[in-house]
Length: 253
Image (cartoon, rainbow, N blue to C red; front, side):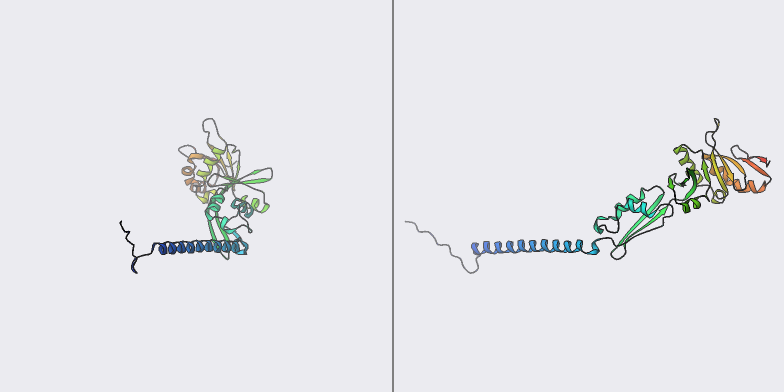
């Protein structure tokens, strides 16, 4: 009859039952710690969202002249009671950049100062009047409706456009006219689109002193680079045609 050998456990051997017990206790401590951390985070978030620091206290907008604070704030989709975490700077920048007449946008968030939005508008180069309201033309070819009397008075220092009924023609004009020297642009009071069958891009320019000039939209940068010299040296003339290889001039009536 065979005898079973007894398994001896000395003080240096690990007791399997004790090992299982210790492992269970360790896992239970980890679970308790995890639950505690989750509750702590939930309480902290609840306290944060309940506190005034979770919401925008102020919104400061700067750099805008022709575009109102209301339009910019509406595009932002955030107001002074919005939750700060939900007002992403990158999203605000993208939305405000889509406003006609906006060239660039910078957004800063501060715990104490709220939201700071700094915009740079495209340069206004001309305007149109329609039913008592004005449309300002920017150097990137976009247009902006303005009805504020103060802004209308401001844009009236720019050349007034007429007969530009095609958006593509107007955009082409803006891109070229913006490159004309400012010393020439500031002398002009009116710009009329007067195409001919032989010259579909012809434009008529009227200066403040009633000088009449003709240029071509796609060549006006080159043609008008000599405007100041030609006009000043021929002050007795009131008609200047820059369309040909030479400037055709005619005396004042």
